[in-house]
Image (cartoon, rainbow, N blue to C red; front, top):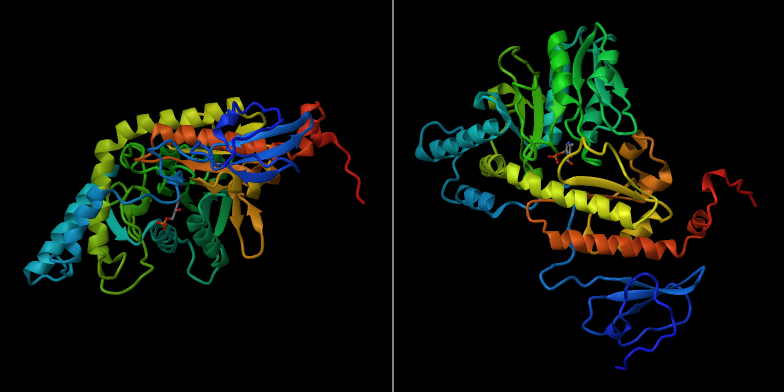
Length: 474
Ligand SMILES: Cc1ncc(COP(=O)(O)O)c(C=O)c1O
């Protein structure tokens, strides 16, 4: 292989040409493989306004990095090896049904479940008797919302005027859809809209409360933007007004200190797979005192879990869930400090190095590990292709026929274009600073590369206000 020779001026990439053996010059935007043991998998050549420019996309990580790097911890987390270890005996020797009262096998499993109940309760400041194990946060939310609505309804099934519920437009579907079902069944639901910072405040809830309000369901922290709502204040408001308060705390619990007593929570949902535990297991906190909250079961059967959730318990999963909770309780503070530092580095470096960049949602009221950033003048799908070594989420949701912009970002007033060209980057227990640095380089390079192909970006650089252009239809 020969050493490269190129006439092309290098853009602001800092590229050392000697790192490559060949550059196929010619038409713009052509991808060419890099051929030495350099730190690149490929480079691209593109013709910008000032002539040809070479863009360097570093795709090969420093030695220790394994690609793709995982920046999607808000979607799910890897099971902690200590959790797996705790679960293993319950797949084999300790296989009993935790409801079997007459022999050692049953008692052993029951002990595992009861330890997990204590570990789960300790993480949120609850009494173990207040924990109901479920299959995950979707089920916990359904049980909380439908179960409470049914018990606290003001009119019998089949009639209108059954009661008023308050939630928000950018909740997870596992809250929105149960609320919409209740709407069809005679309840009225107010879906609050957040401000551009994404926060639902206690004042917004207070303004929506009516004499017939029976339930408020507001998530603690949003899964797409990481923004934190005023949950303790909303809890206090609801308690003062004797309204049941549920919070979907799936993204919050295990990452931030939680105290259901201090924060006036009646019902709280969370899930194992977001906290380094197994998938398919979660819990619902149901307050037993001051006030005692009652729920109508949505799964009927053998009367397990105080009659609120029948079905043989997923002992192995529950043991893992409990262990995951215990680890979070002990490691949360240290983990939080580390992840806040990494998240801030991502946000500041990307905003500093790439113009027309917007961090979506409130700047301070946010989870340690989740950020959501939109990049102007790039096309969403191409951006995802450009950052293929970073496993993260985009601001687009696949529906059956098309790519829809995220309803959460739209709820904050983010336009369709910016919503499509946004990335949710969520960090976790094993994220390293090298990974953060690598992600910054890859995103900067991908955006720079895509903008070389954007006539709109050229206009923007010339000072033209794109929003004021009168486009002509042909
Ligand atoms: C805020 C929130 N609620 C509910 C869920 C659903 O959780 P599960 O997968 O445990 O059903 C998720 C998961 O994406 C979530 O982020």
